[in-house]
Length: 236
Image 1 (tube, helix red, strand yellow):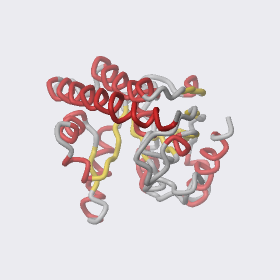
Image 2: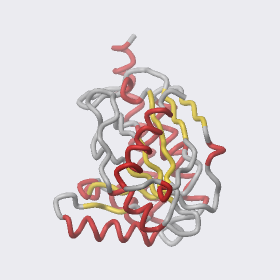
Image 3: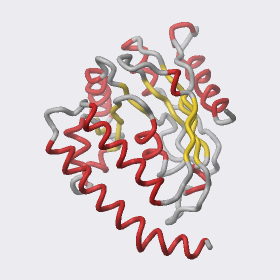
Image 4: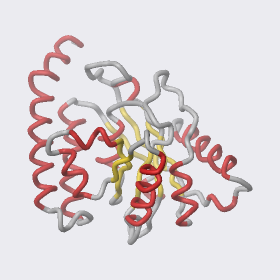
């Protein structure tokens, strides 16, 4: 059955998803004047959900009641797989912007669409440019617009949550925004790093309760508390 599933992915699911990606990117570019509109957010959410529908991957979400529309948050999530981006984009019930590595800007149509939509590209090899990207993201987080950051920096190779880097937390502390831990499970089993095909497996996203970092004595304690909340949410 896995062989048939893989053949289906390459002959049917991926071609259809690529076509849908192009249509979504063009729509986003045409709506560049309204990057935070509910319409464009719905279009992009449907695009992300189509990935899971085409791959027949069951998705469940818990904790939506923990976030409110109109409030800006910094969402911090573990990074299990290539699939994480689509899961968060499809089911997180807020308007948000990713901080993305600059190499993604080169993807035809998609790179341009992400830029006009307000996602921020980061040059990790240039500390000064990276700091400017953080400032640009901070200017975006107004009127309920949020950001989602993967503080591990790269996908896990074991399924375990790696050490968190500081970038996401600087934004939250600078702007006095609550941090919301997101916990992803199942994506590692679907497509671990290095695999070129999807394995059928249920996927789950848990949205944790907002955390006020100012209650912690120092930044290291805050980072570790958020990491523990992400790990705990993986069991929800």
